[in-house]
Amino acid sequence: MNNVNKTLYIPLYGKAYVSQKNIILRDPKAELIWKKEGFPLKGKSRSKWLAYYMGMRSAVFDNWLKEEMTKDAEAIILHIGCGMDSRIDRVGTKGHQWYDVDFPEVIAERRKYYEETEFYHMTESDARAKEWICCLPKKSAIVVLEGVSMYLKLPELQQLLAAMNQHFSSVKILLDCYTELSARVSKYKNPINDVGVTIVYGLDDPKILENGTGLTLVKEHKMTPEHLIDELDGAESFIFGHVFGGKLAKRMYRMFEFKS
Image 1 (cartoon, one colour):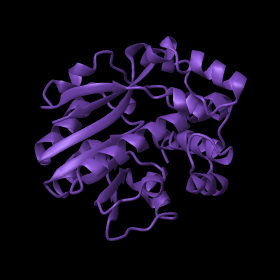
Image 2: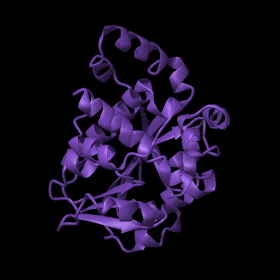
Image 3: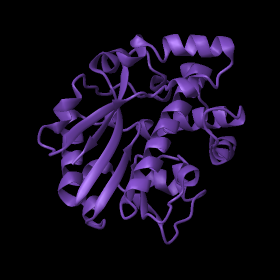
Image 4: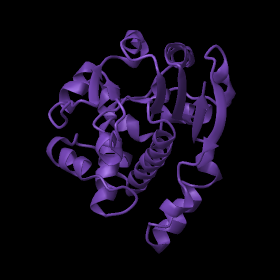
């Protein structure tokens, strides 16, 4: 795998870690895959604080997806940049057609642990290629774009969002993104540095993603909601809430919902 693909092991470790502690996110598949395939992380990548953050981020995406799936029983589900994430197991298809999308080498690893079904599909593609979108049904879509936007230049991200909006009858998207400050700092201090990644991208004004995409910003979501922070033990809950869930964290990393 190239260095960007290796970053998938950081959230995988985080989800396995919190699942083993029986907090935030229940993810036995992450535990299994990490035990067998875990890339040897070091430094900040193995921080328990980052693990808590990765677990909470995924839980927020999961809960949003579950809610949106109940609103639109006919929508297809797109999980772009799925890595080794077991969202398909945590959420379930509930009768929706579900597509996990990632680079061919990632999907090849993924096939060791997941099998396609009548409702679940794995798509091998660079998300930026856009041709893969044309192969999907032209109906409503619910899209999870977790841990992806920071690896795309702004025009690439806008083109991806525009392509989805043009193809599907309607689309709802939840994505996380670095701020411009975070992208600059990431060159020197970011857990992804531990797997060789130093170039990432950020944005400060989410409304810039409306430009040329036809999408509308719905609202900002909190990645570290209080009810999940409360699952941590006393001192850890206090520290995490003030450092990772406070104003400084919002200056570095944010989550936004868009719709067509």
